[in-house]
Length: 83
Image (cartoon, rainbow, N blue to C red; front, side, top):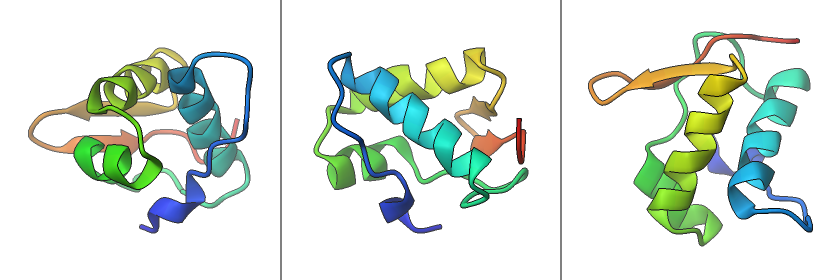
């Protein structure tokens, strides 16, 4: 999977919400599909210039939204292909 699909739009809110929104948009547009594995948190943090804790919080938000599931062993998986 290409990290460039998660381009953060400028927003007035917190960066973790911008990333969660970017993941949701990637799902809605079909850039990522159900069953796809998202890049590791450290890789996303480096690519986006964010702290790994910010990425962690964003991925927790995507889990709360029902978009992804994740654990240490298997990483973060996309649950929904569209909403």
